[in-house]
Length: 239
Image (cartoon, rainbow, N blue to C red; front, side):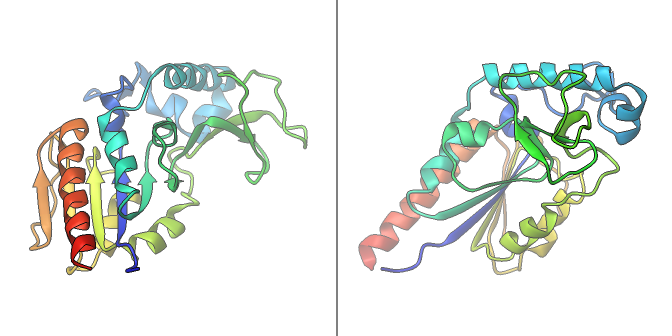
């Protein structure tokens, strides 16, 4: 049997927006009416732990109440025909909820907490709350398992390694302005087709292997998945 082609997908807030999760920040630079500096930086955590915990508790509560949309499910459907890896900037867990089996979280996961003093100590959260006073096994306050501004992105190296194996690269619902994630596109060889799905298409250097699909993820990703599945089916019949 012929080896399946590798699809690598980079997803951002746009794919979750249709499920009711607010995109990362509004045009006024606020995230859910909070300054980014107050809730998404190590400095904000040092200044007011309660505020940061409350903020992510609410995000977690919201994420537990929403369902994946057609864009998420289109990526799951592709797994029947391709070897699919998703590199996501999202922390909401909707890819796994939809059924995707290989997801790399660049910016962490809402459903987990971690030690404030040892980042290797990561725990699943039972429910939606981390409380002030909840501690890791070393006695330090638990914090959200989220990569904040100013912190390194530990999964980036693995994401680059996977991007280099792509036969097809898809970008869904991301503005391609948040680095280092946006830099993944630069690792894709000119022989590999790149598809970008977003109603607000990001500025990306034109290249012969680039296809732009100016639709929301639920529409554009469903169309693209159907096209790629049809292509794989035809290939199987000819084999």
